[in-house]
Length: 172
Image 1 (cartoon, one colour):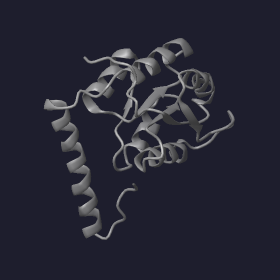
Image 2 (tube, rainbow, N blue to C red):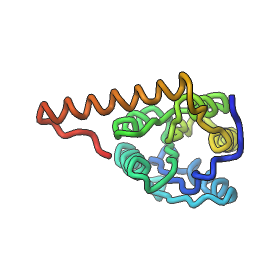
Image 3 (cartoon, rainbow, N blue to C red):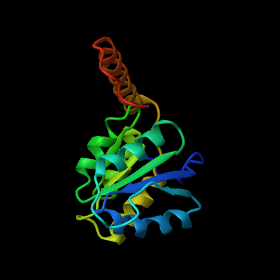
Image 4 (spheres, helix red, strand yellow):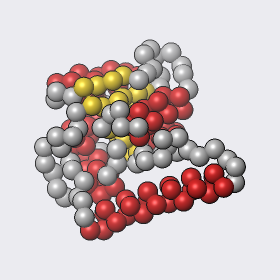
């Protein structure tokens, strides 16, 4: 596994959470800023109940459109918010529960959205996961790059199929 300093291209992070991830998001923003990253908090901005699909869509589309290098999403389990993010073309969101998951999501899958389950993680563990994510580069070339290209090909085929069927393609 290749672990190196965060690639020079990682400068801007979009972060979002529903009410279940709000407190952990608030704890992680200063960690990211201390690393010199520009962090855009796309919501929620309070612990009041809200719907995670809206937040996931905001972060995922911002990353897919190139406004941000990567995105971080948090909800109670990480599962629902990851499902929504992965509906956006070009997004590879991975729920990471430990450093191993974060390293492999980046190195093997070139994941561009880190998803954390706030009910399963305390702030120190989440910080370690974030640091591992940022320090791990994609292992370009070989089987991992081939597989990521296959994922992109499947997305393109699905979008063409949806257009042919008269359905609205996923956003980008």
